Image 1 (cartoon, rainbow, N blue to C red):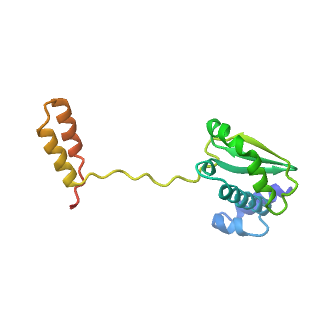
Image 2 (cartoon, rainbow, N blue to C red):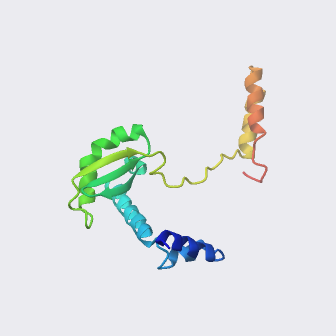
Length: 163
């Protein structure tokens, strides 16, 4: 039985175990991959700390192969700007333990590779007072379409008690 088949058997037999318990098990066969991913994440964090925003929001370290670091950039537009930071990025990586022998950087466009999960968007709230101001403005409008639009906006006022 191959190592892969053994891992599948372990996972199938322990279907009742939580995924985190399976991943935490020392004999799951995935530990080298998990360790590598954590190492790449720590190197990505070091890269991001070493350069200014907004550039840092658009990169992540994809891999290190021999003397080459592969940096993922989330769009071609950012790639054209970040490419100029190549020497600085290489220097930052060379300062990290075990990476002094890096000689070059290869960039790849990987959409959404560098983006951390975006926070939930916050919807704008219109207070009752704001709605009253819109209604008053609508009554003084000569343009009936603009007045109707202001009244439609006023209907979106927050129904909770506000000042």
